[in-house]
Length: 598
Image (cartoon, rainbow, N blue to C red):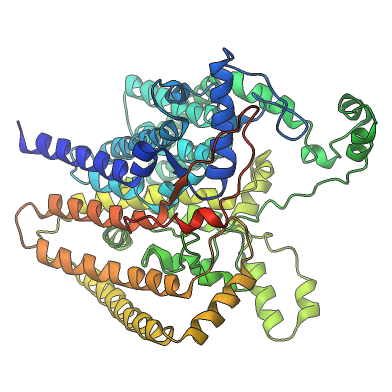
């Protein structure tokens, strides 16, 4: 067996082992993820669907137990027609075990997709596994196990990027057709999994890639004939892809579109017209009157946005703390901290260093595109945190409250706002932070390409040395500060005061009890991680096969850090009859929820 083949097999087994380890409480003890939607929505929904299947109803049409009743197919999160729903039907496994198995399968699909994209961008390169590990175990991807449909869509992003890389590069008609099929299949899987938003983002990325590639060729070519022909080919490619996606997912988007017209978000009109109100009336006639009297719901589109200070977590993974099993999010005390999405944007310290090295010396044309995607997706994920927001905060701090109030809304002028103005119907999507999976994908692929072009057996460049020295200095200072803070918190009065402050600023039943000692632990882990990684890489880069060893180092480091983002609790006891109720994991369950692997 060739050395490369043996190494590929070992790395694939290592990644499988890492994901199984992270989700072993669910796979082997039938526990379920503790955080928010995974616990109180997706698991009860899975139990209800399992009971429907046990009763002979594989595709139930109506759920009478959710609200006042709802269409099952119309609620895309049920993913009735998603091909990998077959995992929910496996015999001899509990619903909780299938839940974790589905997570592990999609994490491995995510790794395969990014590895596929890396091969398309750099054929024969050895950085594909670094990119796959970095993306799969990055917090923007891994933490989506708490919101299952978003993990399912993130799993297919690598195939989208790989197909785009093949489509925009010179290729034969055969490979162009295959790239169209791969792209449309990946987007279709996103829609069928219940996440049309990521599929829409994929189309935005495709449109940008095609446009920029055409403009670049037009500028660099002496004749416009060849770029024009290529642009026409890409337009045909795009039309074929959209047609395939629309036809393959019609079974899902048609009932979803029909059911969505009952929402108050549809054209900003109240939900309850006299006809549907009459359908819901009970014997007293009160339900209909209550529905008819409800005001129009005005949802904010930009609530889930990435605050700029969260960018620091790309270097120090647990700097902001976590929500569970102990609440250590000290950032919650900031008055401008927005609604939570993920606790970190970390995709590995060493992968980050390699990705940053592309700023000075990109390896190929694909690297430039990935750099643009990383910057764009990071800016788009900030949503509300625009230049207008910065001006408002500055004026408020200087005492100009009246002038601050006269400014436009915070989201005006942001990248995400620009998308809502340019892309028809894009304002139906409310989550700017969903662009973070694209940031993780672009950063991970950049890391893999740079590792391939500049293996660690060579001397590190001067720029990377300077960057490493800066991060090391800050990390060492932070580590010493955290140790000093830990000594201060030995005083009960200090720790109790901080805990009360956290509890007052983050009163949320889905969060664990605030803990000042957990804050110290999180900051210690945050600052120690890059120091340990740098020490290890300085030792390894002088050894043979350093590139492969650094990939194993990243796998070990990402697995250990990922333990901070996977928390499990026992599944709630099943009810005797009827659908499962929504549960809150607050209170007693967290007394036993502390994962012992940490």
